[in-house]
Picture 1 (cartoon, rainbow, N blue to C red):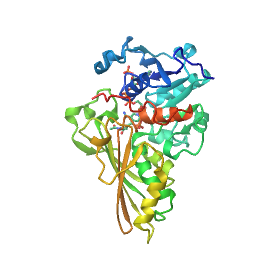
Picture 2 (picture 1 turned 30 degrees about the vertical axis):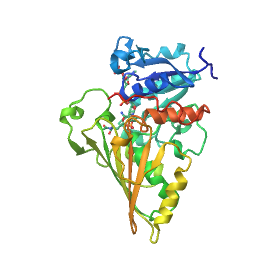
Picture 3 (picture 1 turned 60 degrees about the vertical axis):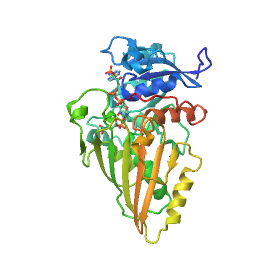
Picture 4 (picture 1 turned 90 degrees about the vertical axis):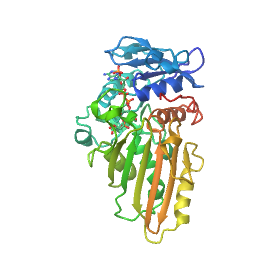
Length: 343
Ligand SMILES: NC(=O)C1=CN([C@@H]2O[C@H](COP(=O)(O)OP(=O)(O)OC[C@H]3O[C@@H](n4cnc5c(N)ncnc54)[C@H](OP(=O)(O)O)[C@@H]3O)[C@@H](O)[C@H]2O)C=CC1
Ligand SMILES: CC(=O)N[C@@H](CCC(=O)OP(=O)(O)O)C(=O)O
């Protein structure tokens, strides 16, 4: 049941609001026409402090108090919707508490993305304890949704968003050769690793390197989306935000340029956040925006598709809010252009 705030808006809580993707949500929600930012939480280890103390560029704009989260807060939370920008295992533990209170949950972590629980120990390093919720959760790659969003919504990962949006049009149109294993190389900016300091993601340490060969947790997520095996190699680059993904497939013999164009055009007609562009996409053009830019080049049976997103926006916060807009019947893009990047 939804209970409107005095302003007539739905009441939203952000858990993990001190982190990069939670902060983006806090900023967008604070200016949203239909949601009100009613609560912002960080970990229990923090003292309460204003959001603008954590992100000074928002002083006098987003001054909500960021409170320490403890699970007993779920009992008294007067919210319609909660956005969880938390570590995976924390999300998994908090979600049932919020669902029990009738709150709609949009989880930005990987806690509910994979349908097969057996993949969690292998790719996430822990045993999933709420397999019933894996079944209930709907994965919200909005442009490809084929069912209504329930109370628990699992927001896609950043790399899977970039390459699934690129590859699904030609796969769904049946243009990709049987047995073809798409090869995906994708580079993320350092904000992809979150705000917490670590030596290997410290800005001065980062150049450009591949990592996570064959075992990255986004591999099974991408395979679940595409319905086939992939070779996925993530890279870390020395820029703050954005993902550039280059996806390569072999097409069926005789597939024409017109067929490929028709597949992309029909997949994304009327989809406001996917831009089919005639130039090679650049992270600089999507950073700070909720867009995914897609471009392709074909040489006979070889097809290279390049896609670019902001990992914190279309890859996380904006995609979560896009799904929430959809669930509650608001315009898909409502409030999505209100964020100011935390540069
Ligand atoms: N960064 C990205 O590009 C993307 C991230 N995601 C996912 O979103 C989630 C958040 O990522 P990101 O924003 O990068 O992470 P950050 O590390 O920047 O932020 C994590 C937030 O979670 C809070 N937190 C940590 N542990 C707890 C706890 N036990 N109880 C309550 N709060 C806690 C932290 O609080 P405190 O600051 O007090 O420690 C912080 O506010 C992750 O699951 C990530 O996988 C999804 C897509 C893209
Ligand atoms: C650069 C970097 O470290 N990126 C992260 C992925 C970003 C993220 O948080 O992943 P989700 O989309 O699954 O939430 C990583 O490779 O683990």
